[in-house]
Structures are given as C-alpha cells and as structure tokens.
Image 1 (spheres, rainbow, N blue to C red):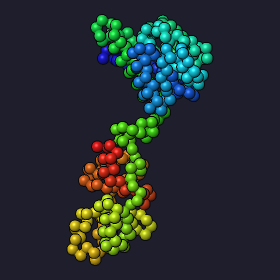
Image 2: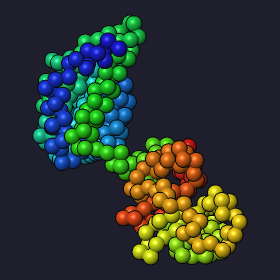
Image 3: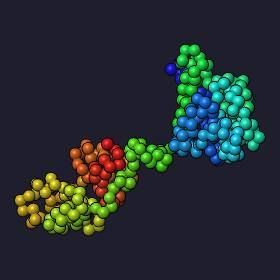
Image 4: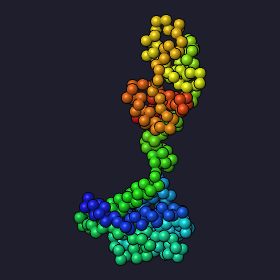
Length: 299
C-alpha cells in the first residue's frame, strides 16, 4: 500500500508527457520486459489494446533473434525493468536508438542504462519489496502494473473511450454480454396487429409468434399498445367480439434498440414483464424477450 501511495504522489509532468507521447503514436505501443517485468508487460499490453491503444508485447530475448522486425519506426517502446540494467533489453534499446523509435523507460533507478537511454523516464518510487528480504519482485511489480493501468485509464479519457468501444474489442465473456445492445439481441420478426384487427386475429398472432404478446400498431405503423395475457384475462367475457384497440394496454413500455441490453433486462425485472418492444421514431423495429438476455449471459 505504501508503494502505491508513493507512486500516486509521484505522478507528475513525466506521466503527462508519457500520455502525450503515446497519443501521438501512429503505430503501436511495444511493451517489453524480462522475467516478472515481462509478465506485467504482457498484462499492460493487453489492457492498452482492449481500451483503444494498439499494443503488443515483444519478448526481449526473442527480439534479439528476429522479433525486432516487429518494432517499426511508427511505434513507441514502453520498456520495463526494475533495475534498469536487464542485459536482455540491450538489443531492443539499441534498436530504438538506431531507428529513432520513441522509448519510455520504467525503472526504479534513474541513473540506470535504460533510464539514461530513454526519451522519457518514469521512475518508480523507492519502496521495499513486500517479501521482507528485498529480493522477490512484489512491491515493484505491483507499482509497475498500477502505472500501466493509470496510463491506460488516462489514454481512455483522452480518446473518449466508451463502453460501446470496449465491446468492440471484448465481445466475449460476461463483460461482452453486459455491453451487448438491444439491437444485437432483439428479433425483427415481431408479433404485430392493426388497431382495428379482430381479437381472433390477435390471438392467432400471439400463438404463432410464441412471445405471449402482440404489439398493436396504428395506420402509420406506430406502436400504440400491446396485448398481453393479462389483457386477455381482463377481457375474457366476450373477448372475440372486441377489436385489438379495445383490449390492448396503451403506451406500453419500450426501449431504444441502441440501449444496452442490460438496461432492458433491468426494466423487465423491475416491471415484472417478459418482453419489450424496441422502438425507433415511434415505430417498432424489434422485440426482446427476457430469455434472449438469459441466452446472452446477462444473468
């Protein structure tokens, strides 16, 4: 905790410059590090890539055997090393200097080789490792990871990165499901009847479509009501003598197809209903059933 507090208090002009340098990159952020720094680097690269900043991890030892070809003059190198003297980084550092590739170094020793060669040095604050004997990378790797996350968040804010953007890079899993839109899950083959349709027709549509409801539209195609099983029970006596407009519930709950499916699910749970019509400019464009949310993994 003390290490993270020291890191937070030390983020100043260099951090802001690092964000500006990354925003100016036309290519990718090449993250590299050896050992534990490499494991942290992989996570930082993955976080950057999933939040709108193209990034790739390059192993420094593999870089010396051909992977330097992955690092181009359009890229920026973010190199991690607690000591700043990791020998496996030498060829990568030399490559960035030879081809004038921007280099941001992250280390705890400001006078180390990495930090002296870097265009910008992000110095980790002096803090003892949590292991107690000072030799196991613990506090240092936690601070480096936190610094990478801070860079990612700052870049997200500058890029005005939204949940919809995040879903583009993360369509799978629970997060992808939570960011799915109504339009992604809804059915366009909707149960609909005209307002003046006889209830015999409305019952047939309800039975055929299998949603347990039907929407009711006016002459212009606008959604004016919905007929549910509750409406059927309330008009059981003489039901077939009625028209759809006489039985329907007016001004039904609807949702925009661009809304998050999670918002639709919340509305259905709150109102204890199983279906929502998606409406654009007053016209129904689809129907979403609570089972669609279940299949998408929203529960």
